Image 1 (cartoon, rainbow, N blue to C red):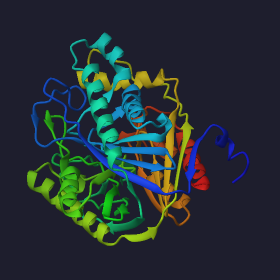
Image 2 (cartoon, helix red, strand yellow):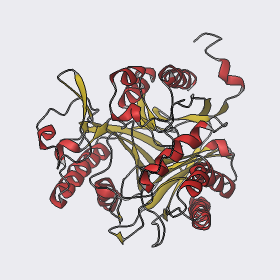
Image 3 (cartoon, rainbow, N blue to C red):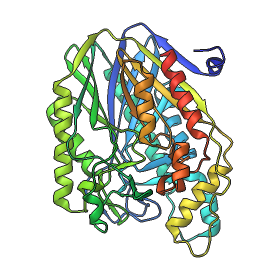
Length: 434
């Protein structure tokens, strides 16, 4: 790596420790109550199963890293910072040492408070999540993390493993007769798309197992697909991924955390037409992959730990849609998010954790699968796991080629073409110094 490529070292938060690593997992309920919005502005009508925030605190030589996976569709901007800051305060660590992931189920809230002033001005009747509830939620998650620190355990070994998942993921962007066709998470209205091949996916579920002297402390699972079988009808659910995760946790003897990979262009559309039996089958097939991954863990003794964060500045698109009278309230909210992102001055962040032979990349937005493959290449033979869906504010993170080809994802992105090079450079730089 050249000196120019290393320019970020001066401003990068870098934590590298060779001492004993300790860890504790935590869990908190994150189910929105009646009267609050679920996805977009749709009010909560029925809770099918609870939404959870599951996380882990890692400590070495008095320094702490906090990772959390929240069963929400997305949190961005101030909302993302609110929860990260609460966790940092509760665990006595730097805000830069905290990363919150949203699993991205679509039967769950999508909250970017930065957009609310614009939404209030244009659509005062649109349902917005209360700041009071968000504050209570952040404190509840933070309290769970702080309480877990009373039970920190030495990590004796770290295991890595992978298993192929059968008939779950399928490509969303399909090239049909020279044009991009979108296969969404359900093909109930487009059954002909279910007959097309799976397309470009990463079929492997990856697992990092932290083990103490008394057994496993936590299992971290990574798989790239939109975790969505239904959406936008007021029902709250962690969907098939939550069902799979909780079923496996009952057998694993430790908390199981699930992170959605770079799944911006990957769905379950080939295998889902919205039926309950299909949802159960998807959960069963994903759970089978989780079980096989846990069983295959190859362990390494006495892991060391490294954590890096790198600022990422992406240019907001100049053609952000204005809010118009013809829009629904949900469309107006999505437009307000794009307009608010264009006014944002703070940079985004990219993070990486190395724990022994495992290397975990943490990205903002909804990154397309190409960035997961970039992480695997950049990891240079290490066991690479990628997770998107940190700060959701930028929306889809696409390749420049995707803007030229068109389709849903680049049209729903809040950033300009040219972002690809910056994201790839950040991934490569983080991999080079881990």
